[in-house]
Length: 297
Ligand code: A2P
Image 1 (tube, protein in one colour):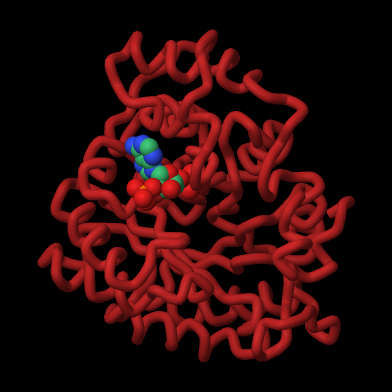
Image 2: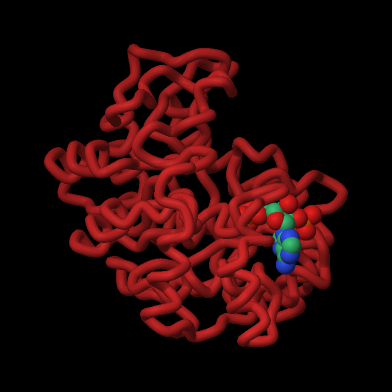
């Protein structure tokens, strides 16, 4: 796998970046500084993770100049009404004057305190506003994209906007391969960025026999096989999350898997999808997510 993927803006986005969902203040600044000092060229956060200020501290502590790495954050569901304000808030917290990439976190506008859907807002209008802000501030905001968009939502966006999202950041791992969505993104020149490549916390994938077999073949950890799986898919890059320094270091090692090995990994689990896997976003309803993310989105 190459070390970066080309976005439709012409910019290169690193193949591996550090994910920070659920990385808590206190730990996340250490994780970010450690990653940047050990060769990571991409850091991903979100307003909704409530850790942007600490991610910013980690960046500062690393001493790595801002132009040496790619930085992504996301517009929160409760900020659809004030796109420009949300961007400025994130920049201030991160302690930077530009983002390499800003994503609409979910196509799910919510009310000001993020407690319920706000049906008066159409996420398509939010996207149009993001386009406007990006065009007016191309240095401050280098690229825009989306996250958690299904084929249906992307189709509606593409039919109504001349600006193609640079990225769609989605859950991707062997229990959530999302082949159709990844193929669709590739056909439109949208990079698919994999979040939760290990299957998130306490993932059964780390002890899956196919994953363990390949880990011992290549003399790497199971996590490296799962991260490499995504890195080997054309037009896909990947954001493993860890707050553990030794894991952060080892997770950046990518293996070139054979097509047969990729197929074997992708067929691990076709029926028992867990977490937010398209098309049903199973599990998010119980977390109080908006009802617009329904079974046929
Ligand atoms: P921690 O952050 O405590 O190191 P995902 O990227 O799929 O969301 O997975 C993140 C989860 O996987 C976290 O619980 C993280 O723990 C754990 N993790 C990260 N890297 C590894 C690794 N190399 N081996 C085992 N678990 C890992």
